[in-house]
Image (tube, rainbow, N blue to C red; front, side, top):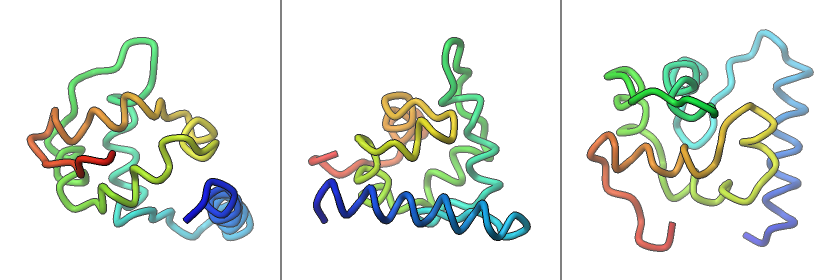
Length: 100
């Protein structure tokens, strides 16, 4: 999937979340609860080590899917630092794809 297509998909996801306010966000098999659990670990300037709940979310995530968002505006628009997010699998002892 090209960068332009990923941006379109990300934009659509954000619009759907905004329009369906009550609908829970799920992205790459990470639920809204998973994002909430990991938020303190991926938010600068002083991220904390991931919690067990965050690592549980990371272990169930589609990491390759998440890697596709590393250069997208979606993560920063959610207050997530992409570099910190991509460091979570290692911190949670979850294997990341080599191309990530």
